[in-house]
Length: 162
Image 1 (tube, rainbow, N blue to C red):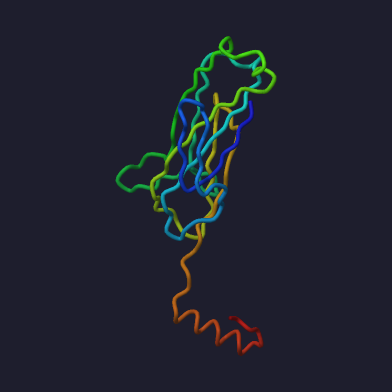
Image 2 (cartoon, helix red, strand yellow):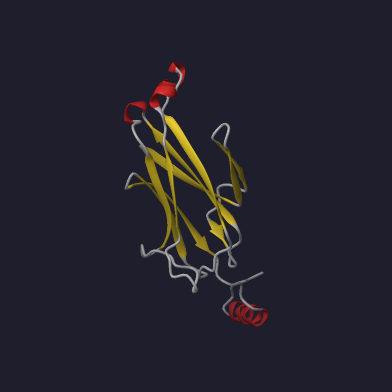
């Protein structure tokens, strides 16, 4: 089984087809105020391995590998759980020539994440890590006074900053 994750501004699942609709997909830099976002996940499973339920977890961790607990009033780890129950006997013969693809989309509310830090969404399926997507939260832009001071300092050193 293999998987991958895509970060986007918004995502939804077309239940009839299993397709994921993405808007603003493929980013890895956000913030400094972290807006609403989405995580789209995809699992590819060889048909010979399709048996029983497939459970998955998507969780957020920081750059040190610690679980993220973004909300002070709820000390819980930020994670999402789900389950697929594919049926190998329901596929048409031509479809078995490629791996089964299972997909999901998770809308994420704006998160109070620390600026200047790297975070990583981890996808585990049946208790094995199969994918991850890293992103960084921009630091706060310098204030006007700090920008002027940096310009003066740079001019004094012969470096031009525009």
